[in-house]
Image 1: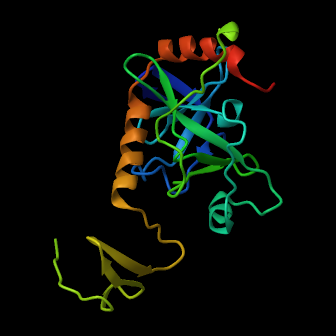
Image 2: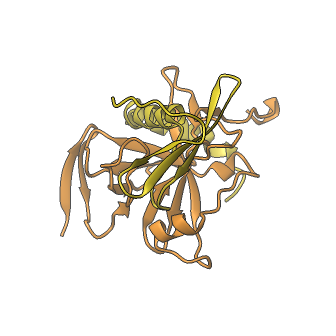
Length: 146
Length: 81
């Protein structure tokens, strides 16, 4: 049965059996467990997820490997357990996108999201001893491509 | 906040299963050893705070117009598909 919530973008209809679950919430936001994955209305690499637990919270996500070819995060055993997968099952890395006041975007490569398609579960991990920033700008592109 | 004095080599317990030990004091820094169950997450406070703040600003500082414009601008940037 469909449900609706009122978000800061208006009413959103969703199916409760089609929810992305963060068993432990997000870093600093441990109460955000359930998200609706919103269909992409435009082409391009960005999509968004809407929190069911807090209608004011919604995240833009993207596949960071579209921009950073060598970026990869492999879940350890503890993380796989939270995701409900074994070492043979696939997981996908996603980055939270922050939009600045000047409408520039940065990717949070320091705290990526690991998503397990088979279980629809996700976790946010902190890469503490990594060179990655919470506000990583997209790499510059050659002028001819602009 | 509870404040205790400890010397290097001394420790303290938080509940029954978390042990914090002062390893050494060196050059203005203190090395701390922590034993805790595997499911307990341990972060440096400033790192955790930075991620929490980034999450909150990422979740609240955009609108649908931003998403449409930005995603459209990035369409040609993706290396795959």
